[in-house]
Image 1 (cartoon, rainbow, N blue to C red):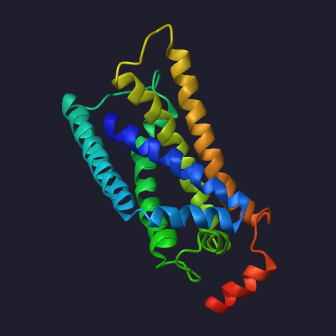
Image 2: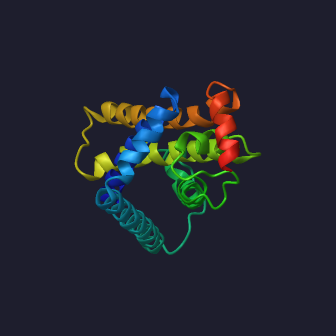
Length: 214
């Protein structure tokens, strides 16, 4: 769980940083995507590693849940959460939401099957037009809030699992988990919000071109 968590957290951070190129305009983010496509071995190697990590992460979560339930065959008469956090108590639900989000995200921005005006290779256009469709941006926002809960507890927990835990330094562990979560969530939330508020939009010349290509 911890090892695959490190892989997935690393990808989420890098993915968010790459998407920040949206604010530099079409040329910057499309050139970034083109460079990735020019390295198919690396691109597909990363995709395979992510797929394996996701599957192992789900398997580990299911295995740990079964172990926890088997450890106590009879439920508590009364249960009060004293040490656990809301993030830790909702890991299963946030995990399910994120799994659904990943499937939709791939179909939306990678494959384009559920994107009505998808243009292969034009990441800027796909992001702008994709976040202008109905409830899509709100689903992304909900998913990022779920990611925040999952990420916060995940980062905190994996640091404990690999031995980076001590009573003297636990505050730093909490702070680091909060920092990583805030950077990733705020960065990802900024994309649909920027589109909805008109902070980023298609230049007039590109609107005409995109309309012609569709």
